[in-house]
Amino acid sequence: MQEITGLELSPKKVEYLKFLLKKGDLVKTTDISTELNVDPSTTTKTIADLAGSGYVDHVPYRGVRLTDMGRMYAEFFVNRHNILSLMLSHYGLSSEEACSEVSRFEAFVSKSAIDRICGSMGHPTVGVCGKIRHSSCGSL
Image (cartoon, rainbow, N blue to C red; front, side, top):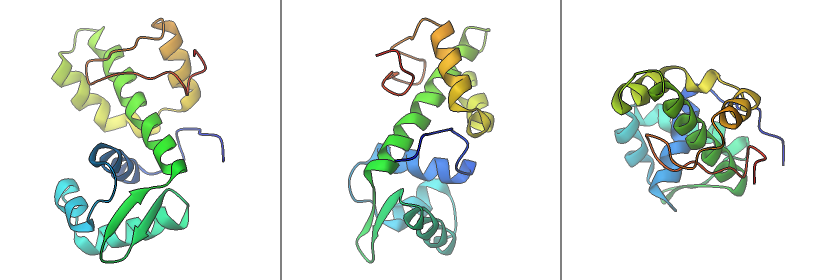
């Protein structure tokens, strides 16, 4: 498996993986389109791109699921969001404001920056948006 840099995917593709992780096993493409507010044809194209890169398995007419690699990336993306949101909450933003602000730029923050931010905060386990796992940042 390739090493995560955190910058491999576009912000929209990051959202696809995070949504698939949240939903669990097999997710219908129509559910993805509805949740992410995108045209079904765009969802089909994006899923094909993600499948071609090994992030998801697409079973036509059944749905989409994360591969092991896709799950690893999705978990990192969720952690990145939680760490950045927690960081912003330390600077006076409410939980909701921090979560909203982070959603605007999180896809442009590298894994190495996240690892350093996480370390500087003492490797927290709970953020304002959810649990923080440390398997990817080398603390555990």
